[in-house]
Amino acid sequence: MHQTEFERIERSARIRKRVLRVVIYTLLTIWGLIVLFPFYWMILTSVKSYGSYNSEYIPAFITLSPTLENYAHAFTAVPLARYFTNTLIFTVVTTAIMLVVTVLAAFAFARLNFKGKNLVFTLFLALMMIPNELVVITNYVTITDLDLRNTFAGLILPSVTSVFYIYLLKENFSQIPDNLYYAAKVDGTSDFKYLMKVMVPICKPTIITVAILKIIECWNSYVWPRLVTDDELYFLVSNGIQSIRENGFGRENIPAMMAAVVVISVPLIILFLIFRKKIMAGVARGGMKG
Image 1 (spheres, helix red, strand yellow):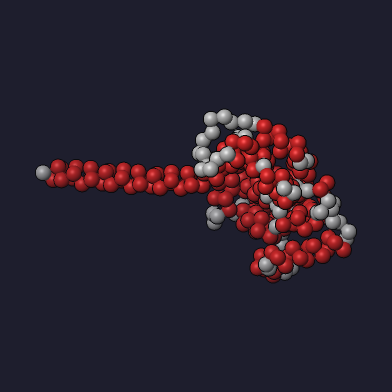
Image 2 (tube, rainbow, N blue to C red; image 1 turned 135 degrees about the horizontal axis):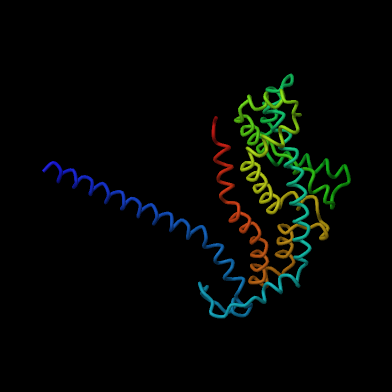
């Protein structure tokens, strides 16, 4: 009898667990559909013909005659390829310089001993409290005074460091046991060699995460490029799309506008899908205390 009662309780617990799992997955599925719907609508609109889109009194959720002419039109009506090239240069150079600056600064704060290190780091973190609008204004005045508007240098220089990324890497570097550093110094290893041979490989997931987040940040950058560039030769994809919308092309041909947005979004989506596991591993490591 006791065995039967135990089996009944166990069966009831399994049923509750299954019901809870079904409810959770149902809610996650609904949430996923809500999040993905704008992307679906963007892609759907981009493959509708101009006439088909304008003739719809009620938006259609499927199309029986998809076309790729909007993608060709998006590249021929505006210099989208140039925007892509500019954005690629800006993203690659900015991310590369930022990684060098961030890794070296994080190593200095995590491993080197110098007078006033804690005070300097505290003041450094205090920079995160400054509103971004004030930083943008200061950077704009500086870049203008240096006559670097409408140049790649003007686009890149204000973005080559990040207090948050330095803090994130510093916390990761601090988790590496001090004994490794002291042993390396006994063997005559220089600080730079120790950084490159020991610390960077150990913290590789976090460094990759920082690089990917910076790439996304640069690719989506809008306010700063909009401020320091009014020459179309230096437009990035973000302010290029804004220019497309403002010159009438985007307002008149919504499918072609959506095609341009799809083309711009695809590289980031592919990047995230390829490195999603490393991003999660890097974020998880950044939140660990060891």
